[in-house]
Image (cartoon, rainbow, N blue to C red; front, top):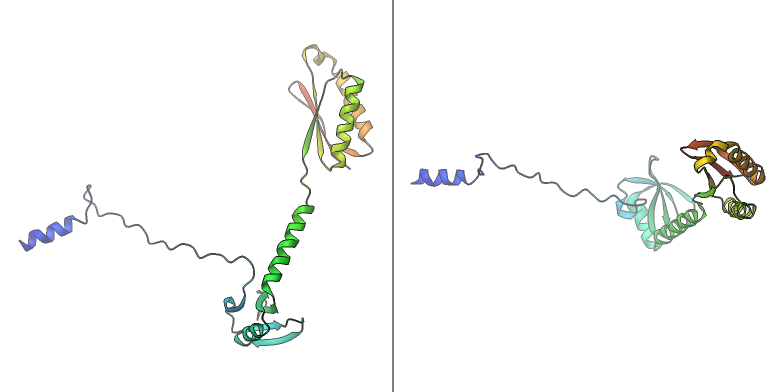
Length: 200
């Protein structure tokens, strides 16, 4: 009877195919990566190069002493140059420092201009009034710092008179020469000619 019981216990470890089940590896979640410099107790070095709240270099100081000094001043010890030996740390208000860094990053993002490519479609036999309207729109795009892709489409028999389209594109180039330059010269793409202009 005991032999039967032990074989039953063993059988419980095998699944239907008669093999031992595969154990899932015990994976711990990855340690959270800290955003920004190390502060206070996160600084593991025994000694640091200390700069106090007034910006005075205090030389090499024990980390424990520096953290105590920061706490007494109601501030934080922040690692500003981790690659130095010993690392350089400064006593400062970390909350204010983080806030000002975020503000600077937001300002920099605001100042960045995303250059768009606007498209202007032309026909070889375009009317003078339509041409003027398109040119005004093009000038506005260049003033906003955007590039302009000019698409000149030929229909039916117009393909036999490509010189008309070439003359029109030359006229566009000369009309915008003061505030734009040719980035990609005119080239055929099927039944249309594409040219890209960029602001000067």
